[in-house]
Image (cartoon, rainbow, N blue to C red):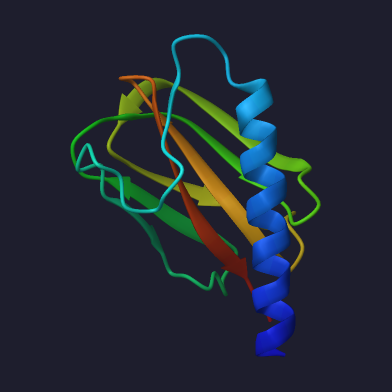
Length: 121
């Protein structure tokens, strides 16, 4: 099972990151590692998400957009916020169990990504 998850994550990473190289709007700063050099610390909890919701928190900027991409590279969730805050809770009730990449775009147009496992009972 661990080997399957590792292979899946590698495939997702390559798929998502290659999409980002082609599809980023002008002016959007992309960070390709989980640990950004701009000290943008992204926290996503609980992870794995077991109760149908997660909290997304970033330390030094405000969240203006949250995107969730599945392992095939398909975007399954998009939420844009009129009122940007550094902490948001999102509902995952309609999202099937699996491995995802959660992408946060900040009010400063920075982008930070993290793995998210959805494992509802």
